[in-house]
Length: 106
Image 1 (cartoon, helix red, strand yellow):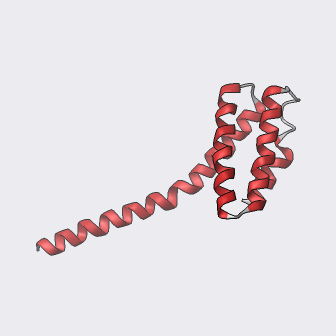
Image 2: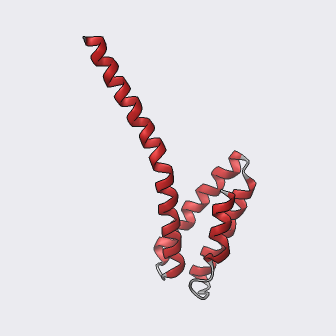
Image 3: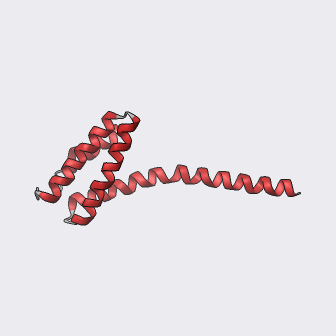
């Protein structure tokens, strides 16, 4: 009886860990893309600066994996974010090419 109970708890814990691993990645990508679009559309400099730091970590991770296409797309996205924050280009046009390239290459 005790072995059966311990086995049930073990199966529950293992399956719970796999659900977390599977469900977080698409949510993160979706959330990340929504925040990028908000950053390009609005004038929220602080949130955009956080996005630059996040993309910096992402591009370094892709570099260490050897995924140079994805890394290059992330670098292009960082360039557009920086241009949007510091140089005040027209809103809404920057994400037209960089976000689809990011989706395609990553």
